[in-house]
Image (cartoon, rainbow, N blue to C red; front, top):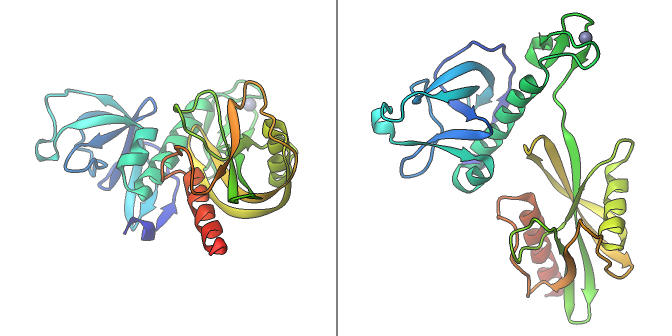
Amino acid sequence: MQLSSTFVPLWSAPEQTGDGLWLVFSGRDLLVLNGPEPALPTGAAAPVRIDRARCIGTLDGRPCWAAHGVEVDVGAEAGAAGKHEWLGLRALFERLPEAHVALAGRALQVLDFERLHRFCGVCGGRMEASDMGRGRSCTACGEVVYPRIAPAMMVLVTRKGARGPELLLARGPRFQTGMYSALAGFVEPGESLEDCVRRETREEVGVELGPLRYFGSQNWPFPHSLMVAFTAEWAGGEIACQEDEIEDARWFAIDALPLMPTPLSIARRLIDATVQELSSARG
Ligand SMILES: [Zn+2]
């Protein structure tokens, strides 16, 4: 149901309000109403004081509002709507429909963009919304800035092992205990995605790759990444983990995989789709 939702991005100046879906943040936590399932507030009746809402687009024709919120009175909640809760975006991945998670990501990035561009990086002048709200321009020198999106790559490396297909999975020092995932890293200035995939793979695990195959992408609002995922076959090199970055990396047989990331992450989709493909190829 949610997969067929249509989001149309819009930009508007702050100080607007209306019915629709509300993405209200306190810091980086999102307001949700608890019911049988957590839900986004659908009107300004949320039990918080709203600061400068702006329309960020429509979802299936409903306006979507992003705003900062200040808790007013926990006791004075909107009756039937039930209790509310502030949830970190990572928790939301598990508990909100996919279309609403994407919406929350956009809302947070729009609010962050405004918060971090109040003054001009060139002359220190005051910035204001410009280009229909898409960008911000300096009231003194005219410098214009737009929201930044940082491309990052992910690659799942495969090879034909002695007993069947294998995946190269690695874990970073901050991963949940026992969890492994595909390799990932940020694109450097001047670098293509393809260059980045080959460089990061070489740096992190000392392995060379054959041709890359595009898998898909996912916007990741921590704080403003776009994760672009590939698969590639191993072309040479023994695993040698990069100190500090990679705690462990190994070849895993596709029928003996370790703990892996949440099914909603592109990492997990990449792994699941590849395992399925390799399994059916094996027959
Ligand atoms: Zn300026």
